[in-house]
Length: 493
Image (cartoon, rainbow, N blue to C red; front, side):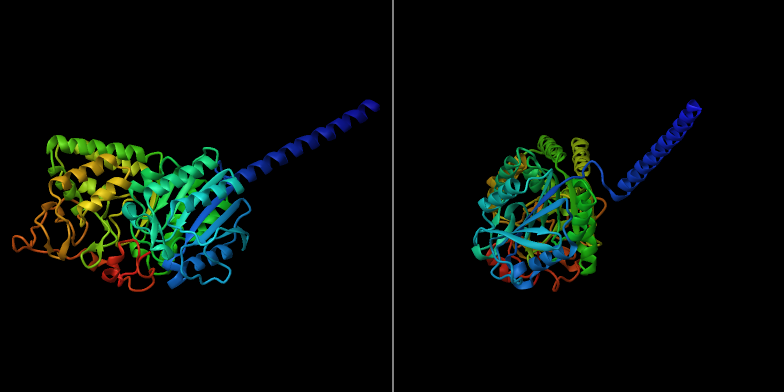
């Protein structure tokens, strides 16, 4: 009797154990399914976002920085994210609770002021260094992201133009020094992602500069519309546990949607760049330069590069009327060169390296030639600007190539109008084209001031761009101040 009772009790216990085990396994399977669907994975964990919000005239004239803060409040910051913000660089803020030099921490749907550093120059490297160090020491986390918000001007001009300090900006060497200090404050851990919510910072020069201090870069080759990124998608993706790569893709997709909402998606570009791969891009560029030198020697190498520039997508200003940013798509340059067997392998190697580094990008109907990384090329420049480029650019061999050309022929490259040049330099006949061709086309002849030779003139690039008279940021400030009156009709970010 006792044995039967014991056996019966054991049988009930065993059945309950089996049932509990089955239920536990089912629960694990459901959790795994939910994890897969939500995007939670190895990249999940705590994040600190360092938002360097240099309002400049984007804020004082059009309140875009205040609108960004409003968007962050409305979106809400997830529990696993600490969003630290420093404001500055504007003559006027449209939000009553915001001033230059205020530091905030976003909690949920609220912003809490946690400090005031005074009206410091946001275009000074030490200001960014201090902010990044503050974030690392006061708000440590498993992952870290830094976003620089303001105007951008490419590798020669930099980013974050302080309106109250003569539009002083952070140049590439200053960015390098500031982020190196931030990495040191994080115990040697690089930033998971660095982003430029700004125009024209999606260049190889920017990527190489950031490659020692971050794993991923998000930046635009082309001008950005005034509203900038969508922080809703960024915060939502991190709340679901996205890693840096997935967060970068969310930023790009959100930006394209937001640009379309403001009817500015035709020229929208944004890329996610694997910074561990950009060293290979620089190496491939150096190999192509060596191969070109072996084939042509001297300044003919620069002219050969110009064949590629002529057939590539250029960004920002591309005429005398608009001015020149001198930024051109790097894959477009590479594939647009006239190929020769002696350097075709190097051309293909450079294009493949770029495609490997750019893991995701968005582009509009008017920027179909944007492939994720641009490079500075002196379409319209001077020897002094080339010398300045050599000082700030990490592309040493390429900078030396340009400098050697100007050492032999130091004539300022200044356009007098859309069909006349100040000097008969064949490598500059790459300013305008009716479209981005799929195969290299012969360089047309031009009407030159010094020769008077008559020729055809293709449609200027800016004539095929959509109107930018409204909805973009107010008077651009990333170029020399004496250009303002020339280009104030064209608002940029």
